[in-house]
Image 1 (spheres, rainbow, N blue to C red):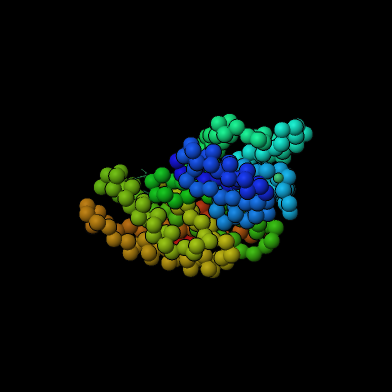
Image 2 (image 1 turned 60 degrees about the vertical axis):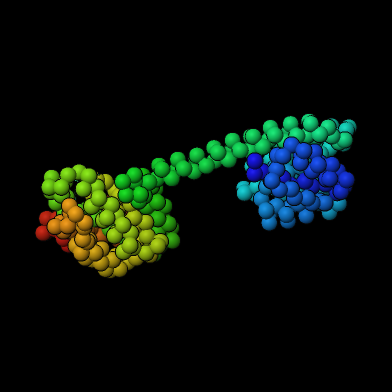
Length: 303
Ligand code: GH3
Ligand code: MG
Ligand code: MG
Ligand code: MG
């Protein structure tokens, strides 16, 4: 196992006894020691650990202050702390648990009990870590379009809503580009759906290349993409849209698509009260512009 532990106690003898007990069971790859809470916190900042064993009464920073500091930091909140208390410190044990300690060990301690308790809390810690990772992955998946790896509509709507609220509060520019590939059905009809997917992936990559790092692009629907451009005026957004249009028109493909060339129509809108006051109004504005681009010949930008 690759666990690491931090042992905080002002008594060198106790620290050594604890570490010797743990070493006998090969639970840890690395042991860190500190003589009080302050030194412990410094060590922790330099090297995060999987579990902490912490004395209560220590000079400078005692165990309670250490616990308070640790539990107020989101990055250390989940690290289990086992407090080391004297035989008759019932109130201290309770206070320690109330302040976020996971467990306590009574001094003088029994090595086997110490190891057994440490094992339990390491197991819980690792389950918690797994759960956190799964949640992060799930969140990422729920925001991602599977075909292109771009953000999906769900994420985009959330992020556009935030941008709209920010613009209403603070003013400034906010622009939107909707892109729809022209006659895409023909691509599928001619080359098949799988080749159509490859075209969508390539458009996605190209679109993201033409945007700035703080713009958000997403796959909005089948062959429709949307880009949110914070701090971009209508003129600037039209400029970007035109650049995207040319980049799409210039795309080349490998066999069996080497004869294919595609174009896209783009609608651009800028958020401005009172023309629009909600996300839906804003998208409708860009969508109307897209419709005009389609009806006036395709492969063009309208606003
Ligand atoms: P227009 O120029 O008016 O936009 O014509 P179009 O053919 O692009 O528009 P239409 O809405 O008629 O067709 C869109 C096509 O996009 C139909 C649908 O099968 C295809 N499509 C939607 N999602 C996907 C996908 O994930 N993969 C592939 N390969 N095709 C898709
Ligand atoms: Mg002490
Ligand atoms: Mg469409
Ligand atoms: Mg289309």
